[in-house]
Structure formats: C-alpha cells, structure tokens
Figure: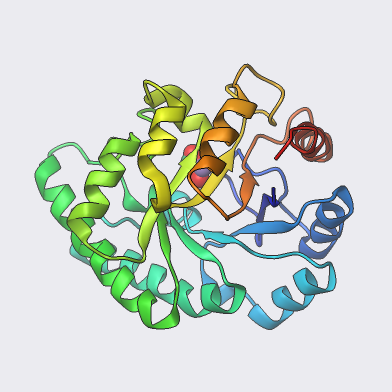
Length: 269
Ligand code: LER
Ligand code: MN
C-alpha cells in the first residue's frame, strides 16, 4: 500500500491538514516517517514555483498523487455553483490552471468543496446544471494533458451537493468524461453511506483517489472505523492508487502522522 499525507503549500485555514507551514521541512519530516507521497493542497497554482516544489519532493523520494483545490473555495469563495457567472468562470479557470502542474506531478486534481453549496434561493436543479457544465469544461481542458479529475462526495455538514457515492456516480455518468472519477473519503462515507464497503465496491474502477481518517477525523486507529474491512474492499476493486491521510493534526501534527502510518503499515496491505 502506498501512503501519502495532505500537505499545504501555503498557510491554510482547513482543519484536517496535518502539515501546514514550512514546505521543505514538512516534506523532509513526512519522508522520514515513511510516507511514499504528499498530496498537495494548492489554492492557486500561479503562486506555486513548480520547479522548486518538484525539486524538494523528488529529493526526498516522494510522489505527488493528488492536488487539492478546496482552498480556492475556503479562502477566496470560488465555486462551480455560485449564482454569479463571473465567480463560476473563475472557479473553472482556476481548476484548468491546475492541469499543467498536475501533469508534471502525475497527480489527479481533486474537486472537493470547490463545487460549492446550493445557496438559499438557488434552484438545486440549476446548481446541478452549472456543476455538470463546469466539470465538462475542466475535464476537456485536462484530457490533453493526460490529467484526471476526482470529485469527492462530501458529507451533509459541509455541502448540499453530492453527499453520497451513488450521487457521485450518477453525476459522473451525466458529465460523460472518461477522465472524471471519484475521491472516496472514509470520514464522509462513515456519515453518508449505508455500507462503506458496498459503496467502495460499487465505485469500482472509478475510484481515482482515497482519503483516510478515522470516525472522529483523527488519524486512522484513533476512532472506530474498520480499516481492514474498508481497505480490503478498496483493493479488491483493483485500486492501484495512493491511500492518503487527511486527518486533524491532533494531538499534534507530528504525532498524528506518526500514529497514522504506524497503524496503517501494521495492516496486511
Ligand atoms: C476535502 O478532501 C474534504 O474531505 C472536505 O472535508 C473538505 O472540507
Ligand atoms: Mn477528503
């Protein structure tokens, strides 16, 4: 099993990111703990020196399996479903701008909260039309670069749009792009799925990326999720990608990263 952990290239507000702050020292720490990769949370690729980032991660022998885009929502309010057409267009352009960087890293682009939430007064059917249209544009722009997008079903407490794996699969059917799949996250699935394992199996080869945290969003092993059973279902689909730690930096970032990898490496995958 190849393991990565979320790392922000810049200071960020999102809570479930163990490492924020000085990039190089964090990459060095993550490599020393035994992780195989870093999932980069990037608000705006224009602010990232791709050569410098690649140099640092390669020097530590780490891969970059995925790039998160949610900070553009959290810190700038960009979204695919904002009633303001200019904001929707900016969100699409921002995701398109991730494609060259993702191609260099060999990373999937994550579409999490950047899809937005249905604002009061906005018709949910209209929001879905905007979402499908935005995803089609982004997938079309990413395809020539050989880049894939992973839409993440996110629980009801964070968005009203695409909470479950079934809704995610229906959406990617509507979009109709072969470079669009899902990012499954154990924290969100624990809240929304009747059976986490059945949902993983139903997703099959459309699982493009996988986030792990325990039921309390602490590191795996700190709550009551059944990781052997979930990971067995995941790898039975033929999944070859990374299992990526996205958990709260509790009791502190170093301890969570160390405990999380110790727990996962002790499993037979
Ligand atoms: C992002 O990957 C995620 O899981 C969301 O909870 C972001 O808020
Ligand atoms: Mn996640």
